[in-house]
Image 1 (cartoon, rainbow, N blue to C red):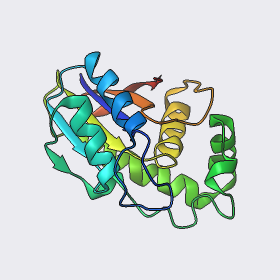
Image 2 (image 1 turned 90 degrees about the vertical axis):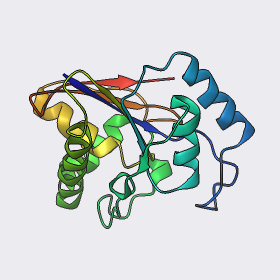
Image 3 (image 1 turned 120 degrees about the horizontal axis):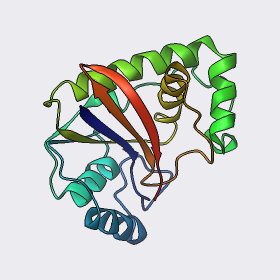
Image 4 (image 1 turned 60 degrees about the vertical axis):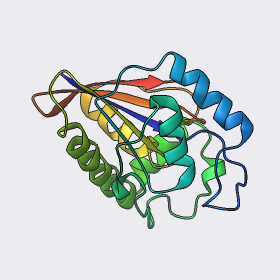
Length: 177
């Protein structure tokens, strides 16, 4: 069964600059994660520097950049502000309330499946993305699989592990730091 770890990037230096690299704390976090990281057959990130740097530090390499890991969210969260969505329950409410959120989740799950399909059935993939982009598809998939995801929204380095069987998602679990 292919395993896809989708993680949020580590802390960056400048929250107001999309092109900023990781902070010293972010680099230290990613280096610590590398010590207990699985061996990955494929390592991808979004095009932004903080995601690329996080992937390189965790897996000690980056095989490619996938723009699908940095999709345009459009109206997925409506007039809500990311900082207000502090828990997975907050994100689940957005998913229930907004058709755009459900559409976004479905599209992002397609990206995840496409990425997982690039490796063999027994391989692992690391995909580094961004906060706000992981929560909606994770919660949609958990609902489909009848799994409950609880706790805070995904912090730096956190995300989900999705296990695929014969190309279809079979399980999901939260990855915390």
